[in-house]
Length: 214
Length: 226
Image 1: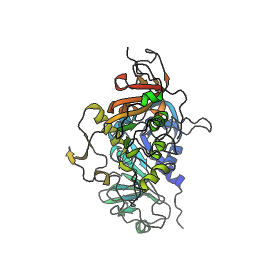
Image 2: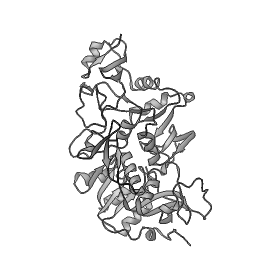
Image 3: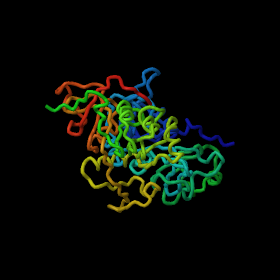
Image 4: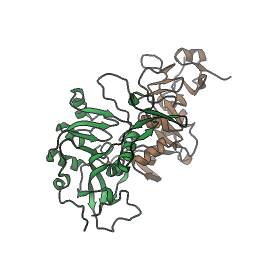
């Protein structure tokens, strides 16, 4: 019986790959869990697109400041050495290629690194993109943290995305509950898999081509 | 003597005509000039085009302006939240036009509008639905989308302190779109928690120089919301 990684385990697995001293933007949702696994001594500096570098954890109850929030509009804190700035500066950091890494959730990723994570493309629903497209093109590395398959068991790692794209060829790695995969010209290279899972079994749940270097 | 201090919210907000393009600062509730927006509702201008990152939450500030039926079109990056029911209802009824723009592209278009540029080429949104029908260009092997400047007739911005010349400092993540919106409007109206004497602000820490600011009104205890 294969034991899938829990959300916490997925976040911990990703956090272990972030080099000390990196500048990182963590997206809303599951990626937020990654922050809990960063070691303070590594001084991994978190960026929030509404104008923070050196973002700290949420404040204790009762100490929230409505003028100190993160991109998800939740109260946060500022670490010693942190800075505030305006949107032009913040997106200069993002589009200007200063972020070593951004971590986002995903709806679909293609084997070419195309990312779909902002819209289900349903008619009548207002489009809402936020900063996702800026992060997708701007960060040096884009890591996607998501379940390997949909709730119905359908593939999310595809030959071609079917949902509206956030960016083309932008994803470097995908961290799922089954595996860690690197986007390469030959397809998705498996960096690791959960215990007991075979490449064949992984391929069955992945429309994109997967391969291992042995 | 230059004195940009207004006596009241009513005086600060005066003169906004129907059909104006109004840049409204804030990211969610942080930096939203709630009292200026409520004064704009009382002032009565209609058919407005509003630029903001979001589309209002609950029923105060920007959401109240929408609910009052004053906004014809909104330009924003993220109109959806768990509390954006006012916008959602207007949108589903076809009573408001939405232009969804990536967050960084809003900032860059405002920067272009404020700094006299005719537009920008951005890599953001290239190859996506938000770039459909737009001019593109390849520069040094990378693909870019052309975007026009955004200019406002008015900007409504919230800051922490101002002096009578209109120099501004901000508080934490309240800053967000404030500084760039101040540059991109013909008339910039700012609410601050505190008006201070000329010389009380450290020149090294002034974020928005007063040249970008036309009117300032003091709101010592602003409503803060998420």
